Image (cartoon, helix red, strand yellow):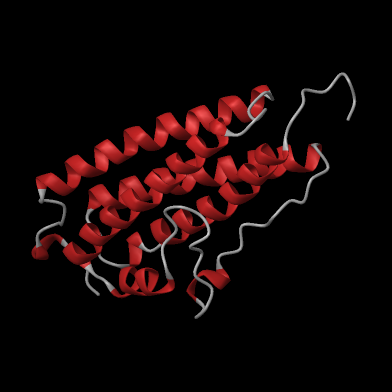
Length: 180
């Protein structure tokens, strides 16, 4: 490693690589909202998640490439395959949970989406905590700032989603929905 470059650890690299897969699953989940008769509030939240996490995936891939590390793609095709449960990372949904969400509609989709996305975001926060507890990790300013942002952003989003769940009024009345 060049002396002019900020140092990084294996924990930093594994965090970035894992978070690419983690974000890809969130994008998959959020991408279902428009076709599952989700409420406008869930559609808006989903759109924000997709934009933010795609940008973050691009950042992580660029960072890994610049540091000559393996750069995972954000392919989600394997997430729904039997035997491909991503339980190695905290918060990742199982194939059964993804299938349940995928088959849900309207209010059921809204509720399950919020419950599962809260689980998913809590897992990302757990990954950040593990990173910060790793010896020598987060000395690279970009890794530190990114992990700190993930923690803050996803904590705020969890609170927003909990309030949405508590309100219970997420779905558009039936006469205002688009025809199926």
